[in-house]
Length: 302
Image: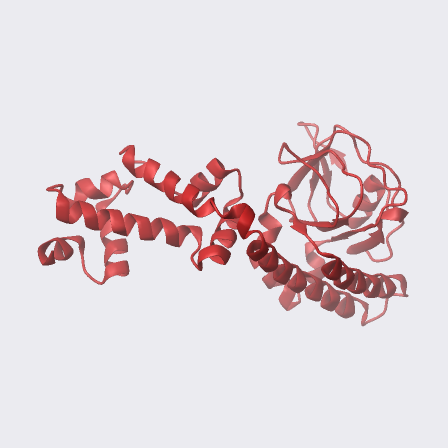
């Protein structure tokens, strides 16, 4: 554990993680799981921390003012957050853990590397969500999480043998599979909250094209204007409409291109530029892929 030139504390091992956050001594060199009530009321206040581990926090009770990527967020009742290696965190105040329900789980990438989960975890998009896009679990979901973690804690507390890692990785895989299910539920049940997301996305896409700046519309650009992570926005749109953010962009570009092709005398290259394409051939390729004909063939037919 060291502080680099930018005063960032880097945490490379599970032992360093446990020491920094006041967790009980680790029982396995590559992973740690403990109840929040066992954690000392300590975090490195005011110091940015880069965790080079996977970590999962499940918390309940009072909020803890913290930052992730220099953005404020709160831990609220019944939330789960998932962090991938390399992300930076910062706390503005001491965490009060006494009497609180919750769990801290951390594991090194090597812990799951030789298992199917080692490859699958890279495709679990919620590890790249912002912390203010936490998973809010219901009471029933919390009971499921608690049951899995109880089993994991029991196995973790036993003497390490040839089966320990296999069993814990299996439980971890189950926990993350449930997390994916719960996030799908959260997207679906938050329709009333996020019902205007689609109209806001379409408004941003229209703004890009109407400005005629030649700037390409990107998922990250739209997500940034909405204050979301690109993956969260895509998953939310998919739950709402069945199409991810990139598919919405393509659908709008094709519809707009069709209008320009039949209602203006702009060349294909000029239309491509208006829509933000740097190279006309990229526009031609997308148009034919989506419609089955080239832009010129569409113009002639219509």
